[in-house]
Length: 250
Image 1 (cartoon, rainbow, N blue to C red):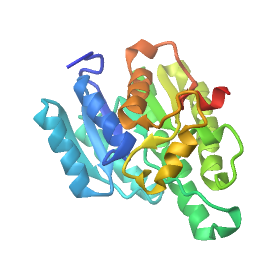
Image 2 (cartoon, helix red, strand yellow):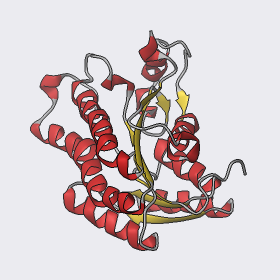
Image 3 (tube, one colour):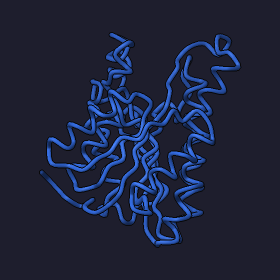
């Protein structure tokens, strides 16, 4: 066990049944948080929870499809109840990342991306941040993407949804920061996860454009999220932290 700077905190992590979300849940638990693992797949979710418990951590699974405002509201209520009346940390990690030509995206595709990548975080923050502000403390970390920073063919739908999340991050920092709630975001670059495995060599090709020259491991992104959620980042508010191997720096 390393740092325990999240001891006693209740952390809700969406999209926590795999990839970056699962790595974040596991790291938070290692650092002492009680982690609420939220996601659609109960089998994978319970597996993440079991792994955390085997290592001495505390976690529970919350099933959530996060398809609309009602599902976000239900998750916020369930998390608050399991957390004994409080959620101290919210990580908006759930998301979809479709790539492809703009003309190929259906109206349903556009709605699905914006519902999960933009509207659900909005509704979760609307339900959870005021209570954090009332207590005078809290941390929210949004998981964005490097392609929210620059134009890329095939990335219009995904990149624009995360660019919206970046602006929400700054607006929420302005809104809730004076009450002690820190709101920040991370922008991962290409990362090896179950979800990106389908990209095959394309993932390595994309990663080769950055100074690091390789994809990230999910744990590397989780470390940045844990930093922003923890006390070491006490003076960091409204930041959009690139964790992309240097891609947006060149």
